[in-house]
Image (cartoon, rainbow, N blue to C red; front, side, top):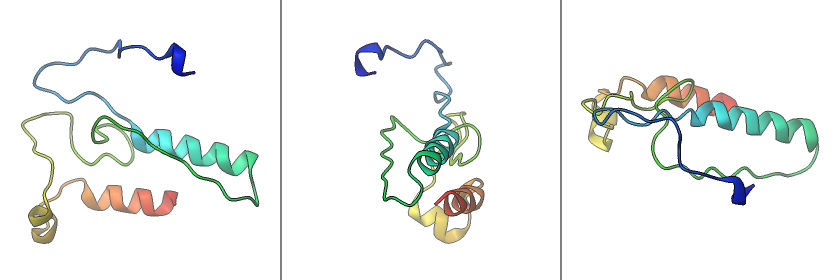
Length: 93
């Protein structure tokens, strides 16, 4: 698998973040682990180059003008994707 890895062939605009659907990928990984290792311990590792920007579990939009939330933003409740992502990952786990 590692030998077959190559550069991302899906270009993105300079004012946008790359499309990352890490939430969906984790959902697939959990489903595969549950289907193949039911009753056994397992571990899923996610190596990501940035935040999820597309699909379930998205924590920031693809637009770079939309800044990634900070701890202060979370405390003030100024986090548009936080609650949906929190609910999604809690249900996934």
